[in-house]
Length: 152
Ligand SMILES: [Zn+2]
Figure 1 (tube, helix red, strand yellow):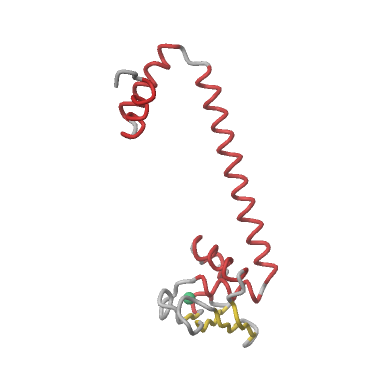
Figure 2: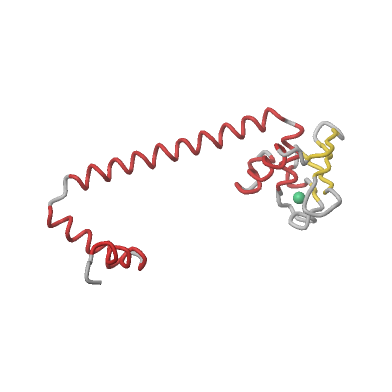
């Protein structure tokens, strides 16, 4: 698995943001598989990062989150993107495509629901509404009462 595949969704995205914000101050190739970089973080001195492409879990970063651990932190991801800008572009495209796909899926389900509700009988609608109000969250119950019961 590549370094990027081993990173959590949050670390990959934050790493991309760090790369885009030019927080990678230095990035040089050590050998065929390793790159060394300096990444600005929350503390004043930058973090020293060494990424190992052949053994991503052996990559190093001296930030508190990843120091001495096999975690792929955002700093490692940022250095990876600095070394391979095309991978950063590809990653960003994939994130956008996944979001668009999720939106399309959401829209599809909403349309199915609208279609289904429009075909329900009045009695089924009455029961579904009461069930939703009684079993749903309290704010929903309170809001319905506020908006519909005049004497309340
Ligand atoms: Zn780190």
